[in-house]
Length: 368
Ligand SMILES: *Cc1c(COP(=O)(O)O)cnc(C)c1O
Image 1 (cartoon, rainbow, N blue to C red):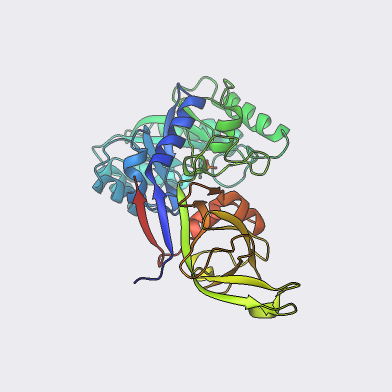
Image 2 (cartoon, rainbow, N blue to C red; image 1 turned 90 degrees about the vertical axis):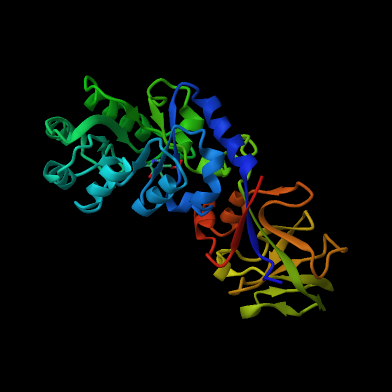
């Protein structure tokens, strides 16, 4: 028998979450963001469920090639654009749209020999200061691109730094205003929002534009947890990380658990040792009291996570023992849900990071 840890990808949940996004912005086209191997789910595991999107957005040329091999003939957008001139040949061959965020990328396009007209998203740095042309340099970049015979269509994008902020912050309104001001009379489609912008402000005319770029929302994690939970946004978990109890220990008062003896029993108690550790992608930063489900009942972890194992408190589940189902996050066999966001919070991080970090040694299966 293989080691019992498993990541189950829920096709119906992916479809549900995509439908939720459609309801929020019914008139917009959607780039389903599948970067980082579909946020750790596997591009090939989400493709069928998300193919009702209008396009796929990602970063890696290799992932773009895999999507084409899966049979996707619609738009694919490279969110970071090309990394070197010869990437443009792959864009021509696979018909990839790409963002243009710096002058060098325009130089490369100008030198690129192609019969295929390129579709590009000119990217504005509206304050995140990661990629893009500042508002002051944006029009000059557009004019250069617009003069190139290699370019068939120019669209415009920016990315907000604070769409997920806990309070409504002025920076998003400022960034939005800058973007619309600098692109005001330029012809072309616009794309501004990620998941947080879409869920929270998708109803506003300036936010809801031609293309939205939902990522995390498709995977059922709340972009602004704990302000809103995934249940409050009506999202379903798309990944369940599950394993089993492979050992049981009875603790007497005063006995400790795991490396560093960080947990000490105060009363007699039973614990289960679970086949899941940080080498599977479970965060080592999750200390005692991280929520976990055993046989679909909520309980907690005990002590330090080790490379291949962690310990869970069996007090609330006296019937559990060797072989019992453990749900690290996602949906248990009895239907109970443990949101990935709660586990992430216990480890001081986000659902995003946990999904992306599931290790290659964890087998993935798609449940229909
Ligand atoms: C990752 C990314 C997104 C999606 O962000 P989510 O918060 O996951 O919705 C959208 N746009 C760009 C440019 C991105 O890099």
